[in-house]
Length: 211
Image 1: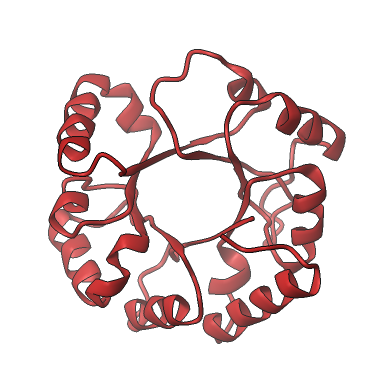
Image 2: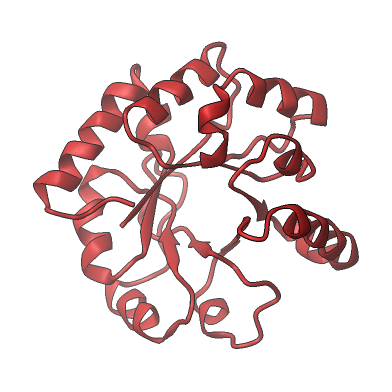
């Protein structure tokens, strides 16, 4: 199962240092999501992370930086999908220099997972909110039965997002998700790195291989 961490919505003084520690602890995929960042702010953030880990980063904005820093990939938001011409051109350039670059996006209903006309060849897609919010701000609109059925029918590799914590790992594996995306479960803790290591141990305890 793919283990993903999404960056904090807030900008922490030592965030790049924490992310580096997560990589050192075994994190293979990090989604850098900072929708308020300028291109320069995003560039400076990436520079703080050792170059050896740049190929584990997927950015949600300022996609041109993926080529400059040789990042793993880019995530397409609703705004990117609306501006299809610009997005198509950007992806064509990125794929020219890196044919293996990963492209991801987010969905919020099962119907989208069952559509056959895919806009892009996505490496995987997020589905949210899968579980009830850890902050009680929202509730999942899905049942385990409907999710499991969708996982069997969809051609996508689907990553669960929303309310994902250690207690959700076993459920996610049972439902058939390709991966789990951790967010609040880490960043709301005093020590995100220690919490991440607990997540790693939980995967081992459940005998679930990590990608």
